[in-house]
Length: 305
Length: 241
Image (cartoon, rainbow over all chains, first blue to last red; front, top):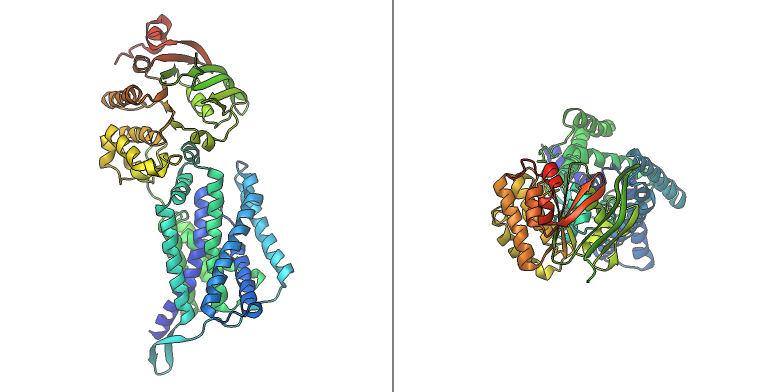
């Protein structure tokens, strides 16, 4: 029971990170029908940007307040990662629009390889670590030899994820940009006819996707305290699994899929074998694709023509 | 003589290597209702879309309100207040009626939104009851009304309507044509209307063009065209319903 509770807490935390990355997959797929294989590496790059920003703030500028530093790191990471993804879209995907369907996909794989190699060469191949940023925990339940804890950093991850998701929901549901984004998802030709700049809207989608993955990257760095150039791949594929499980194209699906994948992974680690946790997560991808290809929240609705 | 609001000169449009428009000349003056009739596949919708820049004309020029729009991207043409209710209606089916209308107002000033919304809802009261319903759940007639209302939200100087009567019951068609007539008479809205329902269209329009195989073959006032024997034979047979 205690183990279950503890893993529930851990799983939700991990799942929040996957969910934030999964939104990027789902949004980009929704608007241009492309699986952006470089998205996991954009996440990894964002963690490095956060790391560099954190080190500059704490060692060079001598900021001692961790919460202030973290806030600045978050904003800086979101800003720079957005810029990076904007440039990627401009260079690697936009010129291929209207070309055959596999072209941007191949370009994305190339971009993924480029990003991880670039970071490997420029930052070195070894794990980079940060000093622990937030310490302390609540003890929720303490039975004879097992204490269920909720650490402050987990709480921070939950809080920031919830806040960001609300802001993101508002952006998509209520603002002009969000409406234009959804309109382009459904019918780009018509969106252009009413005066939406489709190319700009697609660019903005990449920017938003990157900003959310930068939040995930910052949280990841804070949670684990280490990051390496190869950290884009596995979390990236897991977040992709989350997007597929939730129903690719569905925003709530991406978040719920992310949390489910986080839970499956942590529960599997606790009750079966930690060595096979990635196998468990990827089995979900295969099982979903075989038995529920539209995902949990995929679009079943028939459209009137 | 003032210059027309829309001038199309020698426009040729291709789909790949197939020439769909073979040098079209036509114009629409301010305040007019002009109709374009023709058989299936004549190129009517292609002309509508070419005016909006998608596909782009390979030859010829299109001028709107004094500026050359031949090479402009579609969304910039829309910003010049040229709105279209296109073939097949193209409602944003997973957005609500209200959101569809908000999309129509993309190029408009936010301050005018409420007034414009009120205006189109008075014109099409059916939409008022459906404001929060998803576009895809509307009936065909309601979708057509929504498509026109969405175009009107842009406060267009020129409204392009592509077969607004297609697939609709005669009573709904009458409602829609009455609305077009009222908009033209009361607000001075300029309309360019593509129709297969030649009888209704020619009765409504000030002027008409006939398109055959990507070329304009006849033009004249609506009444003149209605009287032409070749039109009667080709487009009005049994069409007096």
